[in-house]
Length: 427
Ligand code: SF4
View 1: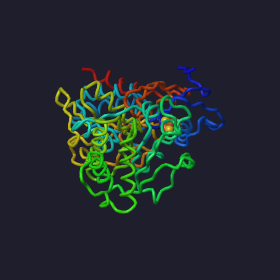
View 2 (view 1 turned 45 degrees about the horizontal axis):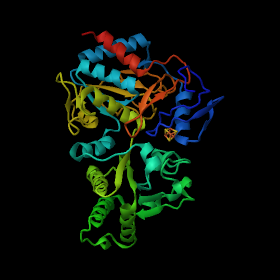
View 3 (view 1 turned 30 degrees about the vertical axis):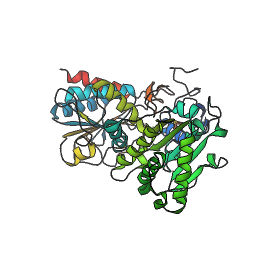
């Protein structure tokens, strides 16, 4: 039974450490915080361990310990004197993001997430052309063919295999009849051990070939006269086979993690895969399933969208929201001296630190965060799902999961501190 009482004996715990937001975890308490997690997930274990073992050095001002009161007063002064504050990082829960938006609205701030580059590879495609997307549950229960693009989905979303690809139970599509096709540079990578016995179809293709593969598949499925042999050898044969499987599938799903697509204009590649799914819907059923949601990126983007009508990379400087995915990239605003104060919010991962820069900076940080460069004000905040309850969005954007509280060690949530600053700023 899920509970709002702090307890290390929780069952059906929701994990905040990747976009799958698995809600079936049980923790075994031990001397060092947790002894084990069931079901196993190394990423979750690491996230909970870092959170539970973190020993906060308390609020700091330019590296020196100060009281929370002094840290808050300094933050208020910095916010009052700022003309162009930048709210970035944004690795927090729903409440933390709501409070961030209220404060940014009050101060005339610009908002961007630390995963903004990856997020906007997907969002630009939706903005330009739209797409047919499915939920994790649809993929799990209905897909009879899943095409996985890239090799990093399994590291970024460690339980993707047992939660979605090959679950123990599936309502309409048993795993025995499900085709898995893996497209990526698998020559140099090992398939996850969980797929070892399943023998998925593997198409070795460098990322520079992914757009061509999508184009070739669209042409083959549209019966246009193209020569798939131009892709060369085994890949050409694999594409022919994949075209046949896609044509015959009753429900195909195309999935990727945009964080892996770090080459220029990656959104154009994603656009082709989305177009392939759209084409397939003329004769059968097909959807895309972009994997995201790590470090609260989907959560902060969803809250920003429902509150302002726009996704992140939105400015509230003009009295109304102005969105521009290229103009309001936080790294550029810092580099071009377009911002005069950085407010960095990062409560899920101690390694998600603010960028080194000359801007005065306020950090609302994970209690275990050690900064390379000290900042004007550092305020340690609780980890959502560990220090306080809350909500987080899953990768597929349709589902908000409740986060529990495991311990009480007096760390305030980011939302609490942000709203305190808002109160103190007054009108
Ligand atoms: S797969 Fe992701 S959400 Fe699930 S337990 Fe592991 S880190 Fe947590």
